[in-house]
Figure (cartoon, rainbow, N blue to C red):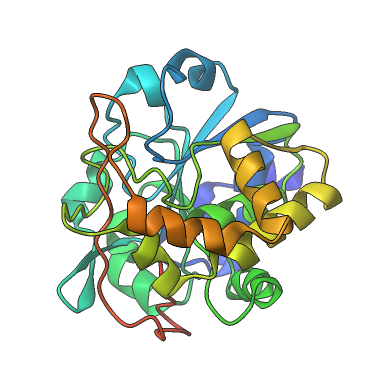
Length: 280
């Protein structure tokens, strides 16, 4: 309780945090006892806006702001987990100062560690915002459980949120690109197949198994029916076969939003500092 009387700058100076970063414990304190929902950009989500807005804390990932289709995905964003970059060409381009300033949310959580090259580049844009970061140790603990390829940002965020004393965590709108993403989300390439691209960068089956393990460990974690079905399919041994069929037969999401796929760039072997990141 003594920390409450300290100024933010004093706390940051004592902890040696860069670019005005807030401590992870300060972020987690805002989640204590809260009903939290993390919302992905999957194309299948329809008419969930009011339900999503009813939660105490709404979490989104990467390029979810500004919010498109609020009737489906809700209007609020309290926490934004972000890789702080865009895909393009053969390398990643970091977000701009203008982008960061436009993010209408209370907290920004970097997928990259506080002392990473990404934070050294983007940190000045984050100064003055309430932001924190996943530690290097946390991210690679998650990655070790998943395997040789890095986890999607959304999977990392789910595991990170569960470190807090939140009351419950519901997951909506994550299907690992099976339904594409809603039109306008992220660095969209109309000719790209996000399902195939994601599997170049990430081990989907390993992540699905990891999510199942997380739920067994922690009964605060709840998945929507779509993700439940995909996880059960994976555990049943049919996931990869089903996805191969989906890739070859993939059609547009049957609604007016015309879900698009995310384009990808860079090498799938990009590991340590700038581990491969997908859009969610």
